[in-house]
Image (cartoon, rainbow, N blue to C red):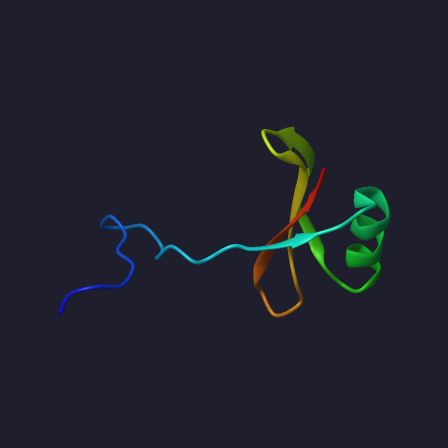
Length: 67
């Protein structure tokens, strides 16, 4: 049985992206920064809503979505 994630040679393995929902994106961004998170993609719009990405103090990248 084969399975799992694969990456092209020389690339870091792909990681799942946990997406959280927020009713107030700007407030949540401030709370993330105050808790020690680092914003790696500031608020942007795309189909489905507005987003930002951050890295938590343990090095995990996550995203926050708002309508």
